[in-house]
Amino acid sequence: ITTVKSIIYSQHGDPKDVIKIHTYTLNEPKNDEIILKTLAFPINPSDINQLEGVYPSKPEKTLKYGTNEPSAIAGNEGVFEIYQIGPNVSKNFKIGDRVIPLGANFGTWTSHNIALEKDLIKLPSDLSIVKSATISVNPITAYQLVNNYGLIKGDWLIQNAGTSAVSQLVSQIANVKGINVISVIRDRDNFDEIAQKLIDQGAKKVISETENSNRDISKEISSLTNGKLKLALNSVGGKSSSNISRKLVENSTIITYGGMSKQPVTLPTSLFIFKNLKSIGYWVTEITKKDPSSKIHAIKELIKLYQNNQLKELEVVENIWKFDEFNDEEIKKLVEIALDNVSKGKQLIKI
Ligand code: NDP
Image (cartoon, rainbow, N blue to C red):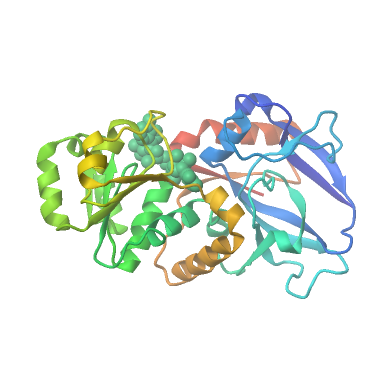
């Protein structure tokens, strides 16, 4: 029998108000069941949106954890170690293996969970905990944005929120493929320092949002990219999206995958009429649901990039959940602090 502590919710609202710590037990695994012990999980924007009730994909709330109200375990991404296996589990999975969930809504903010073999992807045990815990959402998004929209060696793409985890991964993955990246970042006091860091990671040029809105830079970018700026990646919206789209050549595409400014995506009419601009969306959750093999493929490729040192580990802020020491109040406090700090860097909870 395994004692489990999970961060659960039964209502939606401010994450700190709706999460509760719930303790329950799991019996020995039967048939092809696998009991997992959590090693680490990040807090992603989508996890917060899910708790708020504004995210279209969500787990079904259930009474199976022994709560009074139907509840779900929070979290979608994380890395686990196989703790116990049922008698019919194949030889592919053994105790101690590192695994991640194949689908979304798995419930990763927990000390343990239970799964079937078909719901898991095995990772190499020498891939670091941080890399493993954060491989499913941002790296897959970046991998697919760079690889699935027809760009070839020598082409250029432009992206806003150049400092985001996804954008930093895009620059590194594009760099390996010989695709050139322009990153737009918000104005800041230490612009030069951050710009240099992004260039060291593989971006060819970094401009500020003020420059992004300035017509002179458009000429400079047009001569730099020489007719090959074919894709814009938008995770901000508002004016930022119109200003990146203006720099694209004819028949280009702008992909919206996030909306950090909370402003609608604004695009100049003329680009649709005179330049045949295409504006589409991207959602990793739906792509994986429709075609789970796309995730397995991206994971394999990302592992190679990590092993070849072509991709840096995401920078995270580690919050340690001392499983044997923390009482429920201390666990809740730890998660609350991490939630408070999400704007200061990607929060990872490690057990
Ligand atoms: P991070 O937390 O790493 O980065 C957030 C970024 O947003 C930073 O670049 C930050 O810039 C910028 N930002 C924050 N507030 C604003 C604002 N008000 N206006 C403009 N920019 C702002 O995020 P992730 O890399 O984890 O995620 C980035 C986006 O991608 C999110 O919107 C996320 O939901 C989305 N996403 C979408 C997926 C999909 O399938 N569609 C999958 C994965 C992520 P600064 O440095 O200036 O603060």
